[in-house]
Length: 400
Image (cartoon, rainbow, N blue to C red; front, side):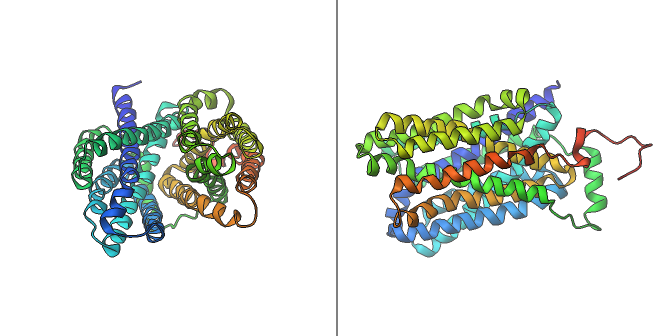
């Protein structure tokens, strides 16, 4: 294994951690930004949709662009935009400026998300074994670091502007050396892009849309855990606020730990096994949490939910990226885009359901989605003829 490949893997880790850290720092400072701009919770909720819209647009632009010019160029651009844009919410003064700030921040986040996942697929292809889940684990660790950093700076009375500006500068500084270690696009892939892009408009394969639908379903489940796990313990089981917060902590810790070991499991059992039985474990865990009548059972259930989901979504990104080397970025953007919409939809869907049924019964919706994903996991094993073996074609072999 070459030193350049190891360096590329470390650089990819750096960009995943940076992405998690940047977005985590924004989340930590949401209350301060809300207070600075004088907006209500309802207005903030509406503006957050602009963050999602910007991310979705960035993903759809970054995917095809990455296929044309390579992830080595698009990753640093996405990282630079995301880093610089972090300052904008801190200097926003009203609804209009905050809306623009969040749209730009979301756009940078979307660009970086697709570009770094596409490069992660390239690194995984070079390694010849699963490495994708570890990258996503480091993204989660970046969020944990942001929470700790935010707690420290806010506790010491640092202004939001000073903190986010400092973080933005550090992000831009980190981007320079990390970018130099990224892998260049393989010569044959670059040649194929140059020859095919002007003449042929690639159509997204049906299998990619199937993967995107599964990503939507399971990332919707993740969104539910992010926003409703603590509320479940507080409102359904009457747990104190401090205890209720442990629900999300248990879920996120299990999610991160699971991703750190998923690559080894995938190498031994395959992605279908991980998604199928991971989704089943998640369904069982959330069912126990939703129907249980004690805090310990609920915490154990949310832990199992996070552990079960932990390795699933990275398999969709990996499969999409390996589907077609020349269209890797576009395929990843489809899966990431629908998955991100699912993440946003999760909290929004549960809210209206609670007007019809109790919160614990509303949580059975993500349980059903996990079971659907378990049943459909076989799509990960349906490799197209062009992707089988991922081997170069000898000169004597005719093109398909």
